[in-house]
Length: 188
Image 1 (cartoon, one colour):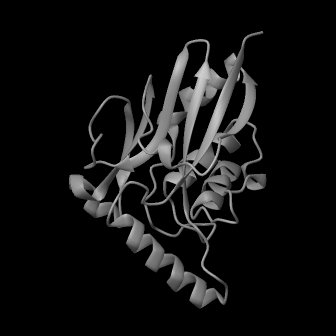
Image 2 (cartoon, rainbow, N blue to C red):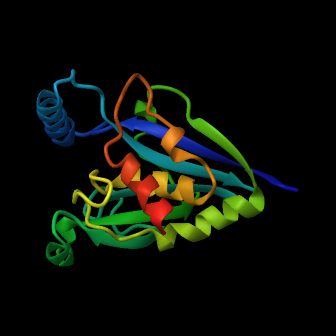
């Protein structure tokens, strides 16, 4: 049986950027104040799949960014409100491409979390990427969390047999949207 490796990368939200890093920090401070806790670092999740067929990158990102419309776009969805998703500025892309690059890996606070699986399970995970629910990014849904890039990754892991609810970001950080992906996989 051939083996594959799934690498979960935790990347600081806004890494390498100028606007998102500040807006996400303000957002976290506001939520921490409302919840009576200290602010925590925020993380964005991305996946690398190393399989006999090659190395694949999987992530969700804006449809207007530096890699927008590039190789590996397998799904898109709206940001903010479903109706506004017809405008490129208010859409996200789900990307899954062989030999793809996750742009901000240099900002990862440590090595990836590694999950081993056989090659057929890894192939099944890759086949699931285009089937991801195309929910509105940022909208609160059934779990009371918001759908975002973390939801995509936790949904894929949960659908692949990994208990994503037992996976946590490093350094006491938070991954908003993570539980939404777990919940979406459980109710499917």
